[in-house]
Length: 52
Image (cartoon, rainbow, N blue to C red):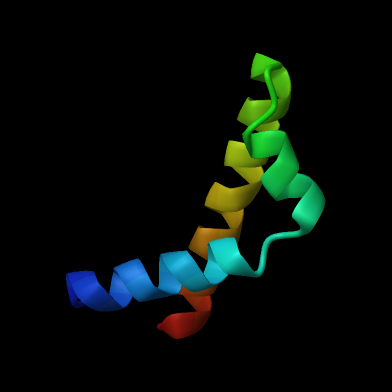
């Protein structure tokens, strides 16, 4: 898959993330940031899997 397409899919998955997840991503608490990163990573993987 073209790198630009992967980038676009990743940005779309992040933009569709829930507002709470986005707030957790900038949390001062490491555990909350980690949970948000895991959720966003799973969203990107799911979006890429749908793409193929």
